[in-house]
Length: 123
Image (tube, rainbow, N blue to C red; front, side, top):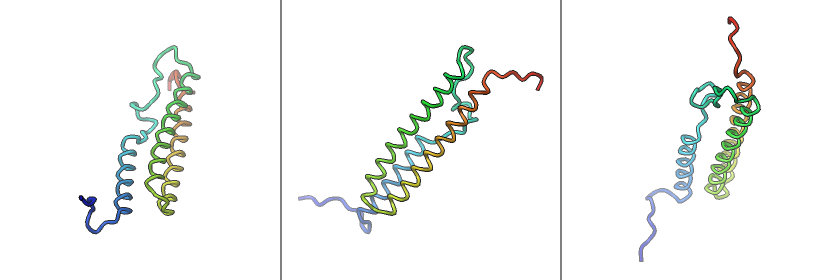
C-alpha cells in the first residue's frame, strides 16, 4: 500500500495556501486590468456608425465579464481557504478591491464613450 506523497516539513494547510497564492497570481496575470488609456484595451471607437449607446453597452459588457471572472477566482479562493478566518478575510478584501477597480475602469470607459468623435477644432 502506497502512502500519500507529502512534502517534508510542510502541513497540508501550508501547501493549500501556497497553491491558493499560486492560483491567485496566475489569475491576476490572466485577468489583469489594463489602463483605460491602453489602446489595446480600449473599446473600438473608430467605426463611424457606432453610437455612444453602443460604446456604453460594450463598456458594461466588458465589466460584467471581468466581474464573472473575479467571482470564479473568489469562489476558488474561498474553497481553498478551508474555513481559515484570516484567509477568508484576506480573500474578501482582495475580491472587494478587484470589484472597485472594475467599476472605476467601467466608469472611465463610459467617460471615453462620451468623447468619441470629438473634433480638435483648432486645439
